[in-house]
Length: 181
Image 1 (tube, rainbow, N blue to C red):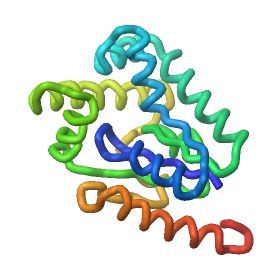
Image 2 (cartoon, rainbow, N blue to C red):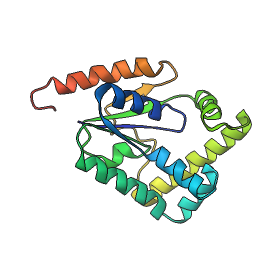
Image 3 (tube, rainbow, N blue to C red):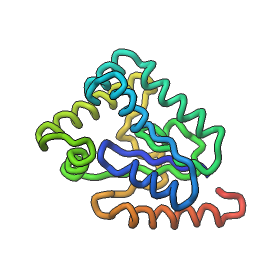
Image 4 (cartoon, rainbow, N blue to C red):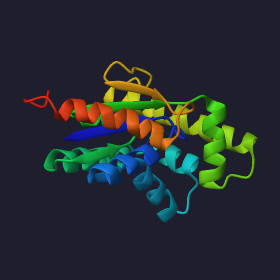
């Protein structure tokens, strides 16, 4: 089974992906962690690294291609990232997490150790604008088009274990069908 988990920064995609990987003994690939690691390796803030990637599409395409390649070679995998639902077109379950900007900013402040809400909002807004432009330019993908997803869940209303329980139910439903479809 291949599952993608996508959403905007701070929506909880990494937390849900880790939950699912642990509870179903799946492996996990995270585009965000790869992107953040590359930013650290280049001694750049995420927004700065995003601008660099905006100028050189090879950064995004390298991450996207690698995720797609790994997902195609493995079963029982969680592929987490903004474009995972688009890149892993044959995924058995595609999930998009939503949460209001205020909720996401609070998570980002905590996760990324950003000094204050104003700074986190500016960084996040710039990152989202930059990424949306790159996705449109590189792949003609509108990141706001959620029509490809099987599930759209609001992570403001439920914690990781509650979201996980919802997805667990979907997984059981998919795996109980004789043809898996």
